[in-house]
Amino acid sequence: MTLSSHTAPTARLAMPASLTSQGYSLRAERDDDMPFLRALYGTTRDRELALLPWTAEQKAGFLDHQFEAQRFHYRKFFPDTAFDVVEHGCVPVGRLYVDVRITHVHLIDIALLPQARGRGLGTALIKALQGFARERAMGVALFVEAYNPAQRLYRRLGFADIGEPGVQIEMEWLPDGPAARRAQLKTA
Image 1 (cartoon, helix red, strand yellow):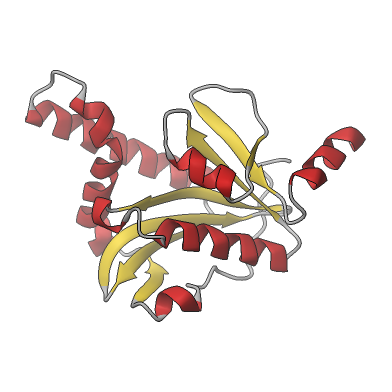
Image 2 (image 1 turned 45 degrees about the vertical axis):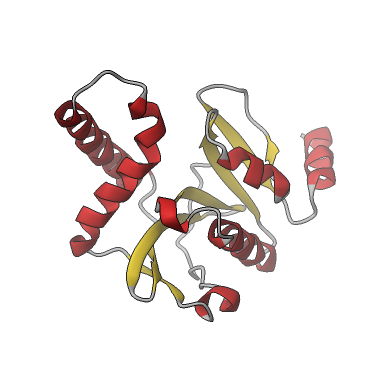
């Protein structure tokens, strides 16, 4: 799999009906989303920052710097990505960044506010992404931090580790499951 092989997305992921019926929607990011996106990013780093003996100002400065660095990186290296905001009743509750490539749909990032986690929203979005990929005879690829508990969700949904272990774990889901990956490896 070549993660740098891009193709212009011909279609975007649509919010599944099971979620739209609950008031969830998906829309493209806008400039006025920056305060929300910055705050959301901060919630993804809360656990690790709690361990540091920094002042609130130092933590805020670090988060601002890291948010800007991540944003720059995503836009530079994943220019064809659909940068979407997940809303519930027109109120932002998360972000979903998806890059459609030649052989895979790459989940660049998914993040939900703490109050939106643990309710099945992330699972439903990942399953929708898998369905989107399956319809196009594609796999889904992602990277997840080695300490991120979302790994359990990805494994439960059929993702397998495919890269060398490190700070981040590369994972892949194929429409035909792990057997397809083993067959792919034998022919490579």
